[in-house]
Image 1 (cartoon, helix red, strand yellow):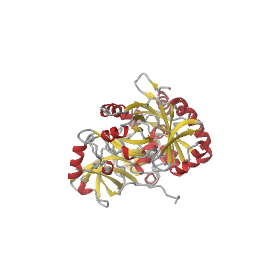
Image 2 (cartoon, one colour):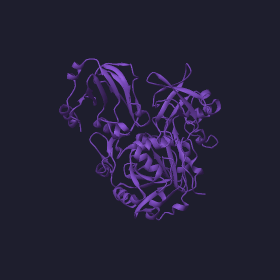
Image 3 (cartoon, helix red, strand yellow):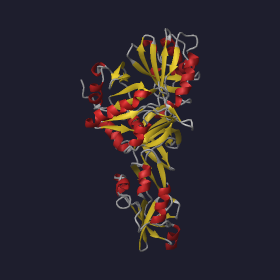
Image 4 (cartoon, rainbow over the protein chains, first blue to last red):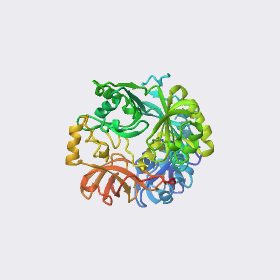
Length: 126
Length: 376
């Protein structure tokens, strides 16, 4: 279920905004579609991400999927816990399974994202 | 006999389709069949087979019966192995090759009786193999009976397999050796029971008519519950066989590869008296050595090697990854790859190109995993 305080991309990333910082991950829907996640590749701190461009990769047993940045910004940190425990993305995709934290470049970009209702509609259509 | 369902799209479904749906399976198209890729999750299913037992619907595989006075000799001509050397009730791994030595399919050949063989082919190649055998049987007292669409196949694989199957069958499993087959009943259903599999665990492949498949599945699931039997999809089937170092047609094997490259030279019986299809080309490979060799790789750096990724040694390209995954049992990323023979020695360090980065891997002998032997 998509938490109400987050914003979403149509590629199933979520973003939580706190001041000028954003935390990014993938939704429970995406994690469910992927199946058991075994590897996550994230950008190093200092890298600049561009909205909707790929910033990393999430791998399930069978497949490799690109991750797309919901907003532009500079990477503050990647979730190092995912190196040893990629399954956190499956067990807690909106919490412990977070992927990157960034400093937001342009808050106006958030307008281009889906709210929880719109994202919910997207995933029900299927 | 009940024919397997044929859908409008030309896809087949097995008699167990409703069972997979009821268990919440994610279904995909594979080799012309709608098959379950996973039920609860690939990692859980993989572990179930390694630790307890798993039940697989393999009804998509091809079952080709070859019968007649010349059945053995005809197969010796058609395949690279020498089936007449099989005693009744025994089986061996084989391949059917083209004139140029390229692999058309990998197979298991079971000898049921003096004049009766069962050839099991991969789902995606069943029709091609069937056609090739019909052609190659020409002139021999042997007929092909393709029962692929009439027969179902359920496999029980894992250390608890004997505990689960023995009470259900009149076949004496204690005397059924690895790569042996016997005719009998399972759950009161007429069946062929083979001690073969594609997981690296002990287990049984049970062939029955389509009409009895659901009953067989239901009985095995019920009886196996206490032993922790779980339904297993094609996703875990792939990770299991990769750990066991077994090739997959379409990845390690195809029309452009020959048995020697794939590390299966020992099954090419050049000393058999029959001329066989591909002999000249394969004799040449045996003489000159294969131009590339299939090896196991264990990733040394962070990353998973996948089918199609390039393999280098320093600046020199040496080959390509054929299969790869994160090994649930080993906890490491493993892969199979073709490399130049000079780079095939275990211990060699190669680089796999993963999204424009080079990640180191070590060449290791196959298999990656061998089941613990507790029996004497």
